[in-house]
Length: 315
Ligand code: 13P
Ligand code: SF4
Image (tube, rainbow, N blue to C red):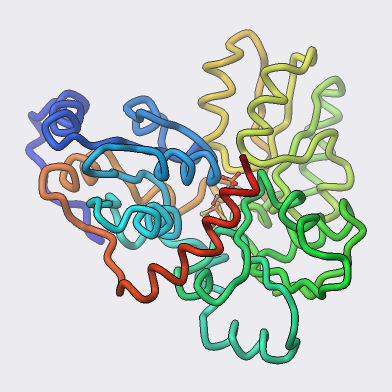
């Protein structure tokens, strides 16, 4: 989606806050959004917290600053509300790498199994799954499946492998990856650790196994934030999307947070999809109430069931 023309003289922050009130809208933002977007949000959270916030809101409009599958989840839970996403092209490599036809063919190879899908997938894949999970509740969701049932896990292979290790439960795993969390360089990380020997390495479970093996703590975005704020340590190397550093620094201003270095000299630890949402596009989507998330009711209702099962198990 192209950057829309917006009068450069506008005070975007003030306009967004005005429109938010006028539309009775709630602004939900993921930790991986630009800091100026996070600072305007009513709720900042990880995938689970934002799904929970979407479930309980009584606003008329949900402006979702995150990626497509997150806004889609909010719409699945709120068929009668308007859900807008600043940039509809804000996808996700995990969701894109798991098309519904290949997913169904994969499931058909393992009849009589329970499918758990990571929330980073399309509404079609959710509708064809038994349970949804996020990185916050994945372990609990896996443990909820009776021991005699085979589990299919899609689409993140790193989170899948990590869960097998944590729970001791064998699973058939779809081989998808997150382009951001696969980017960290172990070599550069070890060099950084030499410069900061007291720093704790903390990592998101979407990272590759060798990195997770040397991490002091592994957790979802919100768990990493909590850990960093509550830990007595003063220095942290953070292996996840760099947007989370904004909240870490805000909540623990006296501590040092270093973004884990990517392999090449790029900004690859920034999610290219998340960063498609800009203040200009947020302003326009609140002004025009577009682009909106829409889907056929049959698909929505089918996708809602495994999400509701997840929410019930996450209370
Ligand atoms: P969480 O929000 O569950 O930490 O997941 C991170 C992520 O990559 C979202 O796309
Ligand atoms: Fe998808 Fe990775 Fe971006 Fe999250 S950080 S939205 S998993 S590509």
